[in-house]
Image (cartoon, rainbow, N blue to C red; front, side, top):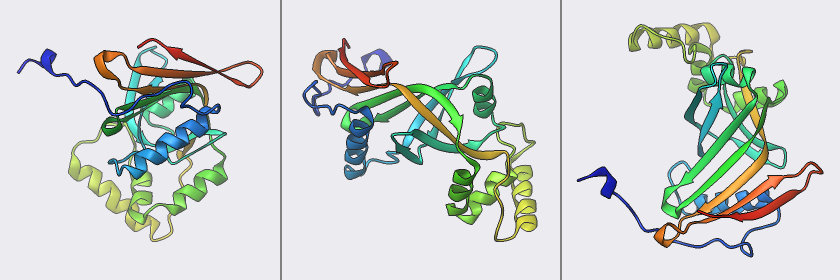
Length: 211
């Protein structure tokens, strides 16, 4: 089969200016709740795109852990490639793709580290193995083989015990949105796209975009 022949005509739902809420965070919350209700696999998975000092984009899948009017929050190793990118260029783009609902949400904005207390609280809510893993892994750095990685984990497990403390190199980031776009697949590729752009005075301007 030719890859070029792979296609699907979307027909699950529609999205009009009258359907969406005035506030994009509230609209995102509505769609996120619907993704959970539909029992989609990992509805909190999102693509995170960053740009480093070499001006080359990089993307990966991470899990959102919180969102509200302050922004969209995830946690990671600050010394990882994405952490280094965000240190050099504190702007990023997020993408949620809920395939079964034929929906995407694009979010763009500036990024800042969350307060240490917030990172501490989330770190201590994680399973013990995940906390040890965050300490043991030098994320994005080369490792000889799987055995060496597991040896690092075992050594950290022995050193940390049952109450490991959050390492300084690990914590949360929050993207403060400046642009949010909701995409609903439609027939004949005439998809619905409703975009919100944050204005200088702090309000959101909403408009429909051509597919």
